[in-house]
Image (cartoon, rainbow, N blue to C red; front, side, top):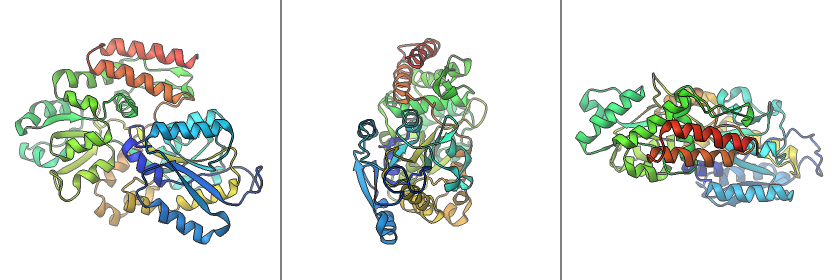
Length: 422
């Protein structure tokens, strides 16, 4: 589940791993042999070493509801495949699932996860947009555990020498990436442009920032054929054509793009907050020189896509009440604080973003809060995995110059319509 995050694979991995909670709206004594008892929590692999101790704390105080952690591969695609295989079979091997926020609609539409009771979870204390990632068709199907939003990282030292503020609009970003970066031997701008989930996120952010959308009505309606979508995709394609997005960025996932920035090769980078933390660490080529602002858009701040992971309860969970209690534990303020301080992962509780002690330690928190509050989910669809593959393929063709942005948007509309009528 590497930044399952849609574009969050790198982060997501961590996240997923870290996450462990899910809520059940099933009756307390459950339809599956008792509401309380032992649980399994399935998550992507590559533990940061912080979920284990959290679950040990739960297991010490809840001996009759011990949680066994099941680590799946750290690749989001492989984790998705293993989870869906188990869910389709009805085997119920996993009680609680730590899922990428983009999978909630698919799992809910298939009947694999149970709707949850809103009153069991502190949803009012969460950042409001994150709750939307856990809803499908008007019902709550998961509980947010970790959130994420894309930020624009930049070289503070370079912009200070030029007497420039960080860009707020695409025009400012283009101008600085094109004219300033080469003076310092730097490439201009990069995101995650390899054809994988990260490109879907970057493309959605460009379309959303221009005021457009991709799908509506839970995937029933295709809305991408718009001037805004053409403007967003043209922005990305123009960057490659004009050279202020380096061609090598067409091979970047989260980790490769983070490395290019922290090794001192880029003026600007779109990435998740973990890249800010990594690049700012003592000993990197850019330590002390990294700033972060919300993603720019055509006329001012743009729109990020929400990343992160949600916890869901298997429709065949053996002990749904215990599953809900575990989620409540993992979404408590004390545990959420550890999500940030031990995992450098963005918590879902709003109050933590305004805690002066945490802001001193994580100076990007106010920017991240603004980005999450203005962010939007990836297109919701029961066939999200296929939607994402279409977006990746078409936008990659536009960025490599194989198709004009206008033709790319027409093709996107056609292929997405074919999926929705499939």
